[in-house]
Image (tube, rainbow, N blue to C red):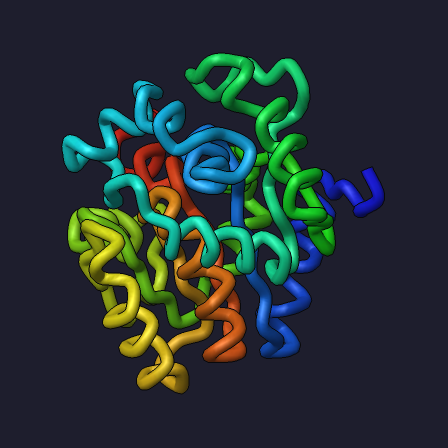
Length: 236
């Protein structure tokens, strides 16, 4: 690896600095879904991508996107290259329930194909780790937060109540890739009303988080399964 690999503490230090100094900051993550989107007619023929269980679920409306989608592929590639920190799975990961060949192995092939080198990397499951640390909650308490996710109101109700007691200024429903442009426009138009955006939108969150930081100058996190941990007590 020719990029720095950060632990949770180091990522939280960068997050805290960005919030305090009012600097743009984006954290995005790569798992099996992101890998498959990026693999479309690059490292794999798209026909092979479409045979995978994840892709079949996506085309049944379960992943917030349908495939093939080359525009999303190219947007995810750009976001990975520009994001401040990119979460990647370690070799031999056992957290994500997916075949080994769809995880770090495929990420490495994609990085090589695109000549991608993140500015910095961390564990792809950092979102799950962060929500179990007091430091994360201390950093975002008092910040004006926007939520972007399918079950936006459910998550908002959890986060504004104890023990979190956060300041959620808006909860934007996001169900599908088709919401992308409208969501980015809203965030750009309302950039003075928030400090931090938490995205739980599957692969779409990679593009949304990086673009939001770029367009608004704010902090944007690909929050993923952390939302399920908060609302259901479990990532699944």
